[in-house]
Image 1 (spheres, rainbow, N blue to C red):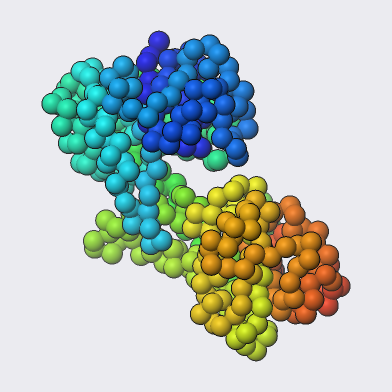
Image 2: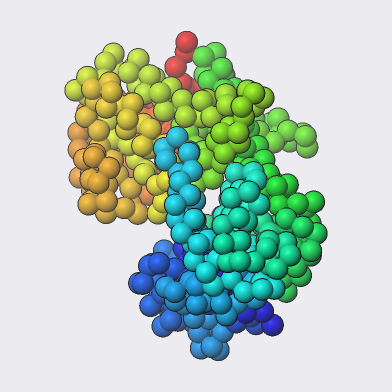
Length: 430
């Protein structure tokens, strides 16, 4: 049995702690948020937690295998394995701010004991595990790869289905030495049911996560570029993609108003930050295309209305994906920025966010029970609440942009408004 410290009890960290405890390990969760620590020590979980998490935490708490603390140093001093899942905060351009991870690493160094294994699961730029955190951990007086093991293993789960993904997706592991890799592999074979994929080193393991998220960003950019090309010719790209994907070597993604979330808009920038010789032109162009979809949509509305000055535009959906209360790098924010620069009066609705939370983004909250008069609506998130709206209730409505291609176009047209999908042949013809 391992004694494990999980540093960072966010949406994924707490789920990892519960997973390890469920496999019979003794786990101490560490977090700077006393509320999360108190909940965990009562066997409870925060709101909007993972399906199945509440039951696992309660069971582990009752069995005495899961506890939590704000004192990371003391928890690490009792642990054989330290798993770090503290968020790497980034600005709107995707540039990393290591301050939180650095503080966590410094606390780990103060408690690190000889023979322990430290594994970073937070997605990192290549070389960070060995080049940044290794020397910081050596402030303990111990030598990495000699007195303590150090490895990287990217989290590969989607919030909302973490336990499913932990069972299903192979676990990628790479250490700074073969011995560190072996130690991390043995640990994960004890606490996970998934296949373990052993990488040559920590840098390769770091690159895995960056490569897989960049693939998705580039694929979405290709879909968006093809969709815009098709729109300009009145061709339905969505129908073409569905047909193309019946061939097993074609995996075209869905076009849309943009890409949001912690991963896809961010991690390609980790690669670009090290692209000193402009080798990653495709990756850079993909980021530009996907972020540029907000302008593409606003241009289409402006073309339809003639002007956006003093026009009233409602954005439906702040969350970056349906059913998840998370707005990180949401395309809604890009849309609102472009609309404001064109002089539009903006409104925002999302069923998962309160009026106060929406107002915090500097936009007027809207209520679907009594929607404000608007000239245009943009569906940014495919929430179920938006799929069967009565569009006739939107006074003055001229055009609806279906940013996720989830609406019934006929229902929109029946209400007397124009319908524009992304790549459905109904968008602007340039």
